[in-house]
Image (cartoon, rainbow, N blue to C red; front, side, top):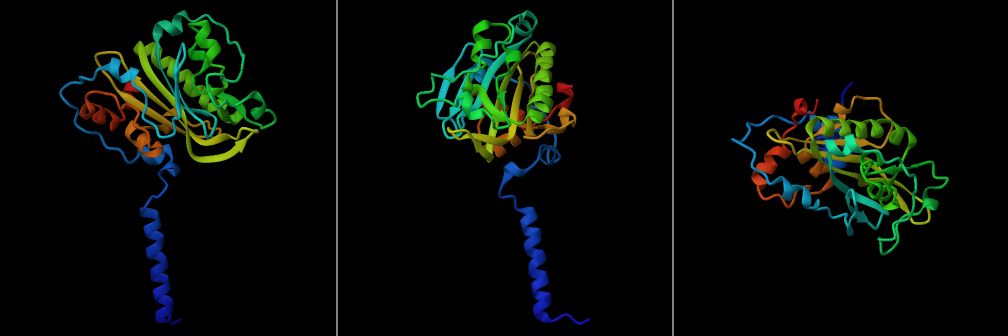
Length: 281
């Protein structure tokens, strides 16, 4: 069968556009952790790591989605007014805190009166089908009664499907505590990814994120490393390592600068590009 010149031109144009759409990624947040992970290559390490870890953990992530920054007994929180939840929470978790933790879970969910414009409420979640998912987990706050109680503020909640919250998300929270026990102390940053937002719930329009992240920093000498996790908001039985990516990749997805206050940016940027899975079991 003979194909006309116009038909051939149309086929060529179609395939050119198809290839171009594949090669050019306009929406990086749609990449999965696996896609990001496979694009990484190891780099030669510097002579030694000289970061000031105190400055690293006392600075806040530079995030355009943060409207208000609040400090609580067990964690710091950057609040997002548009979607009525934290853009991020950050805290240091130590072996001593885990081993000495005896405080029982309080379940005293309540609005956060420190949010001047008002936080989400329990009514926003009622009948929605979503759990009030912790960002700073109650299980990490068992060392102090105030820290435990404040972890149930609605500013620390994000709408999570039961399959996600009670499954892969809980597994990751448990693994974080295991890492703190093994390494003595780690710095933890957790948050939702607001691009995309799947839907809004409640009168206050609480956003349902499409993905969630965690960043972990090994603070214990002599070896230091960073790791990030990017999880789609859905149930999964996959091994947690399938969701591990570099911090640099996560910054590209979120637009955040997680360690903007670190004094040695060259050293930090090298660490952010590495994914040393052996260091994190």
